[in-house]
Length: 352
Image (cartoon, rainbow, N blue to C red; front, side):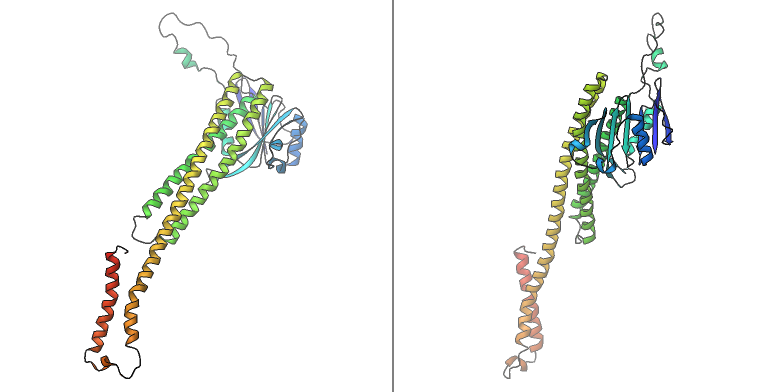
């Protein structure tokens, strides 16, 4: 599918689900979603570039993800999607700056694209509003009529940077959700240590699964940030050649600092995941040792009564206790005493 965005003055209009032959030549942003071969050929004819295949987008070499060819600059990054559905995943997305046009190629549906497209079409103009102008100079002579606005609509460069800023914001949202989940996991782990029941196989199995999911998301987020970290210096180089507004270069530098901060936060989350994993495994080991200790004490407690019963179970002809009237009760009392005494000794030693 093809979505095209055209600029009229300071406003942006969206043309949704276009055919291969319906792309407006004045489009400043063309968004390709799961394109067919006919749609790819239409973009190649319109822009004079070769659209990368899905396999080429998945290559991990930097030279395959960031390059300039046929007058276009190709940048591929792994972006997160599926946060709202509760099934986050990552997929490659290619940004192509060619002339005064941005082409995005993707086989996933990141929420960041929808958020940015809605904002772009809603407030494409950056000019001051009429109420704001009327509020100036409340006292004194009336102000002179405002000069005609020279503000233009968004360019391909500003759209690409705004789209990447939205992507970085979504990555930050993902990291916040991972941090919140780790906080809940930590509370569940330490709360379980106060319960009287054994830790339960199902409860700790669920905790380990949640920790594994959080650790996997942290590592994959680090991978996504690594692609963005490589992309931004290349984008800065491209902007130096294209000579856009100075504001755009400053936004790219600020975005690079945000990505660096998010990388540090991912490292913190990875360390916290490792700590919680070690804590969970340690709690499981403590409970397993407690269970083994109970069995060991039970075995030691039953050894003396077993010894007494074994002695009086011997088949010798001459055993004086066999003719005693109170021989049987005495043997029972002896077995009970030999069982209670070791338990009292363990309690005295604080082994129980």
